[in-house]
Length: 273
Image (tube, rainbow, N blue to C red; front, side):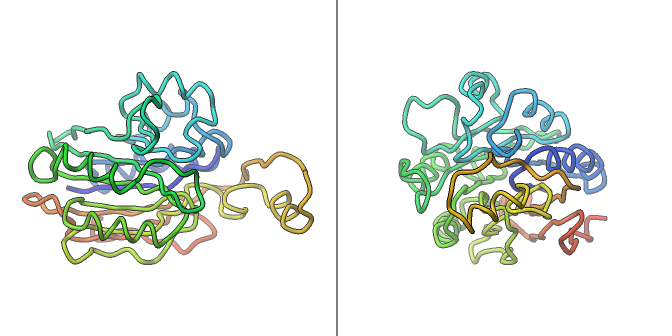
């Protein structure tokens, strides 16, 4: 199976990068499953129903979220009727939405997608390790699922790496999101799980984490109230990770970083072309 995971969409540049490139990539790379983090898709803060639909129509099979899940209040309502939009599974009981979903690919394969959020330097939610373990116990790789993708939306690299090792051999891919800067540690862990500490963002990299530069820089210099953060509006770069799994075990055989667009050195799975 060929899987593509794309990091946090930030504002209009990120959305355009996805809608412009993803349809062609699905065909060119013969992708079986695409998952994208969309928690910053609405101007950098949350997601709306129309934007979620736009991402799904562009070729995403599922959209994951994070600490900005409900910045757009309408998400509290429409998340309940959109099974392919998932928020972190370790939100408290009673939170609208779901923390995992099973996608059926065009070839009939079942892909479990799980979203959890870290607790270091973020809101102290329920234990993400227990939440991830619960979801994988309910739908184990090789039995109920042909592939398992886990989005770890977290600040600390240590927490993401710990999750990767905790789930090694039980997931096809464990990938970090949230920090918007792609890391270079993509690899297959000893027991067969593909891992990347952060997928980066889909957005304008001539920015501060996808936001126009002036206000974030001013805040670091002055530490005084200022204007609202606004998403940068330059050309967007597509960032993420590509994984090829074994059809028998569902574990990863190979993993590649994906970066397509300006400002960063481009890379992609050339073996798929």
